[in-house]
Length: 349
Image 1 (cartoon, rainbow, N blue to C red):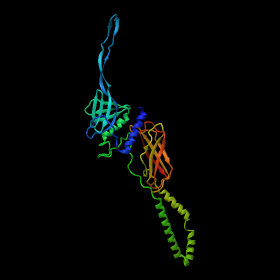
Image 2: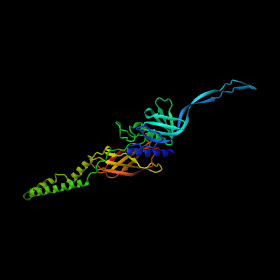
Image 3: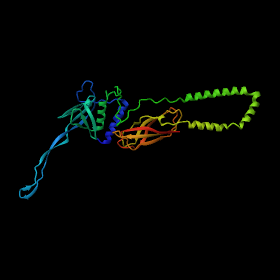
Image 4: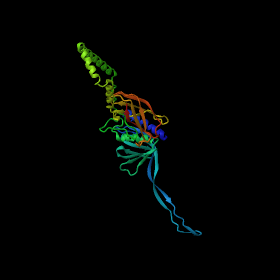
């Protein structure tokens, strides 16, 4: 299996685990113990470190006559440590142990004895407590084996990752668990219009009674006061503009009040552009119309890749509004990407 195909396979598995908060069980030929479930089973080659003895020849010396040499030395036997293939068989990972079942050799490692896991493109190295030499398991997709083994070691019950006193999360080298929080409800436009209509009716009633009360004999005096104060009072249109300007400058736009959900990678095929699903939530108490989001990419080791992308959204976001973006096209993206994260970097009107 090629490296690209291996990465795609582990990405699909990670997304399934994220959505279901569970590691899928698999069938196994082993006789499992009580409370034991298998979560990985695949063909495997077992490699271990072995001492290999070789002969190192000596120097023949200088020939001074027929059959006579000066300065020669004898050869010697030298022992070197080399990685040697031990056997072919099947590797099974359960929630309690790691078992290699070969034709001539068997190995069983309890998960609570595993000291470390080191993965390369074709195998993983398992260091075991009380064992001087590491075990090397060569499989078709080492990314999947590494991911499943780490979940089985960390989780109390891999079939239900919500159990346990400590929250079990997905290894950040592969993906980030989706947020369980629900978006706030959309504001009711009907309610806003209803309140506005009631306010207008009340204003009309008040103005009508005020006109009746101050009408009649006081109209002339009122006109004189209005004429006298006309030159002294500022233009109401200018005052309204000044109030509007002051109100506009009082708005504070904060990136922390724009929430971006964890992008869900919809396609794992690296030959196509990356398509993601996410939502943006405006938590300001006023509308905004310009939001910029930085999308960052990470490889399987958790290292951030250099080619991040900033995408701008010029849509109008009402106060409290949540907008869903399905099949959003991020275009080309760095190879070796295993995770994508969105972060709001600017917001304005």
